Length: 225
Image (cartoon, rainbow, N blue to C red; front, top):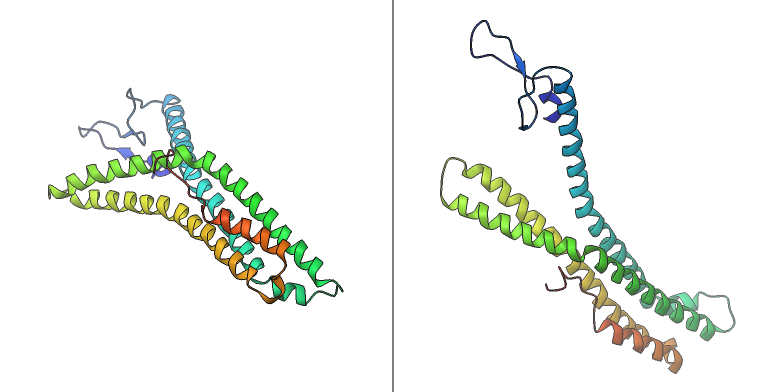
């Protein structure tokens, strides 16, 4: 729409009047002549695309980081559940040492993931608060316009659906991270119940992981919700 607006011509009010160009968006002054028209159009293009890319980047970067953390947690859960199979396939004569190193690696990896999640919290804290506040506000306004049953109701239904999808997206990412974070405690519990894992040192490390998983990592919007 923005690119094609540059080539659109508006017919003049009279028969003898010439066609005139129009800017993609409203401007504080009327611009029809070159080179001011091209410069004004270029300015509107740059502002529009920069705002669009900034909004898309802000909304997607946080979710991308959350998905990375969820993938790391899922990988850690699978490694905990497969400790026994991993150690049995080892060619080392001391299987206990192999299991100890695997459990310690999982504990260290879990700690690094928690530090990574804290960084995500610092990045997305304000962003999620603004996203939740603006989407709820927009849905409230558009919902009132839809209840009026006027001719523009279809337009507001589309806007309401878009804001609802954005609100659900903001809620889905942190909820998925919470579920994956809770699953680490269950995986550590089942790892401690495996036949080869009856060593006190391993169980102490797994117990610490279970205690940490009892407080699953939960992202908040502005530290409140």
